Length: 501
Image (cartoon, rainbow, N blue to C red):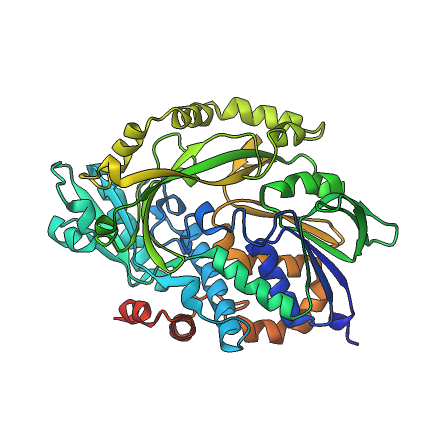
């Protein structure tokens, strides 16, 4: 056997989209490896990956204004948007490979074409959006972007949002037709069906209680069978902690030095859901605005067409909230038990620095339905209270750590990987863009944890992800080819025809 094919025992903790993605990649690269998945719930994809627990935005930085920062001189830094867009292209390439090789079927169950629109009002915000448009239009990744500050044009793009809009405040929009709505719950189910067919052992209602590194370098994982109450010990050469909000606790139990000094801050989300089919049919886009001052990036307001169980839906939000739970199905003690001697000063520093955020979250928790409707009416002026109801979305745990730029106790917004120096264990922490960039994140984990094998796997990785190791922004011809091929495989052709027009 070559080094890349030496048999290994792999344990994936958590049956969400992250473990599903890593397991699927490993089954393509090292089909003989033994993979076991432990999930404390009764089925896969029921926490952060569940369709109701995330916004379903295929995060490609097409409309999310928090990924493009305004510099002091008024110019726009689009580097983060470029990076996230490249990473979403990686995901689409891998999904296309799985469809083309009959690993999964019916991509329309999990991905649909949908315009991504940015919407702003007020003279300063209109200037910002125009500058952002000009910066993005010069980049091959975003060259199909359209801009308008003409109310008649905007009315064609977002008729529901323009109906009965009486304010004379200036407004502007950008639109990219090559956006998507992604049902990560459905994708997770499809990936686990594939993994089970490849003899991956998925154990539901099994909670990981502890991890201990053996002298050999392997890991002993203590698992409780929640149905029988029995405790089992499992051995693994490599462990991936992809348990959503619970990942921090398990990382702490591993005892690896890389996990010390890291804290977590839970933020819950809620959405307004439209129950009037006539209203739902009037909107066909994901429309993102600007976050209120002091609000976390996950609270950027957006009005989203969604495809849930193959039906069109309309959601507005998110409204942030606070719960000490790290998962919707977690414990009220999660936050307290995550505070350890090695991170307590970092957590306290974050608490002192984030008073504005704390005040914002308290205000959000206390909002009445009519106050939420007022926020919705900034997007849909004629929204009627009886057409909308509140649903509780998922929990997100934002990473808190000391950084050079932000100093002690800096709240991080994004997705982070923490791994042991020897590559025997890796944990995924944080939130958005998360699932959208799962394939890129998992390839990063393989590079960190299996550097020697990756050299041997590279030809296969490039078969699955043709842009691997390349910048699509620097290779517009390759970008064009990949958009066409992923469009065909995933049933998004109309979107890409519009993009190329």
